[in-house]
Length: 165
Image (tube, rainbow, N blue to C red; front, side, top):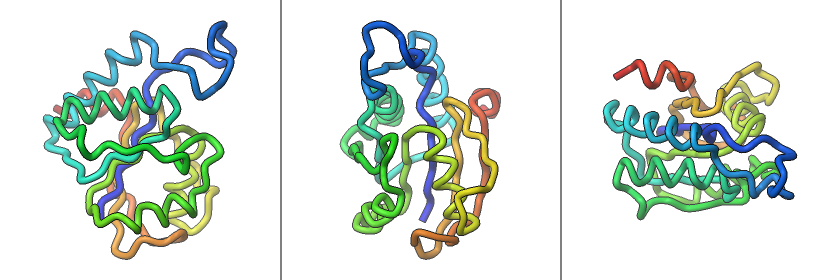
């Protein structure tokens, strides 16, 4: 199994007037433009997914939709509260295991994504990993479980993604 982790793009800052809830903060115009470029680069890198699972928070949802549209796989896009801020990573693993997908893109937030990556590669959530906005990570997994079960293949920032094609 291949698990990909994508942090949402640049969003409206916390506390911005008009966005009372964190879940309502959308991508900025710059965030949308950069995510479109990152999604095009992902297509050029020939990445494909059987499932895109995203946090339902607006900024992650927009990010996932941009990628799904660019890769022409909107039918595999789903949303999970297990990827939202405060979500349950153990329940996320159960959710993923209940699906037969082998190439899965998870779209979410920090520090949740870094903690999940850390748990899967080390069995602990304290490995220092930095996922920049628009950053992408690939893990390979033989048998998925909540704990050490994955190998880190690569972790790249948004600039590296854009310069990789």
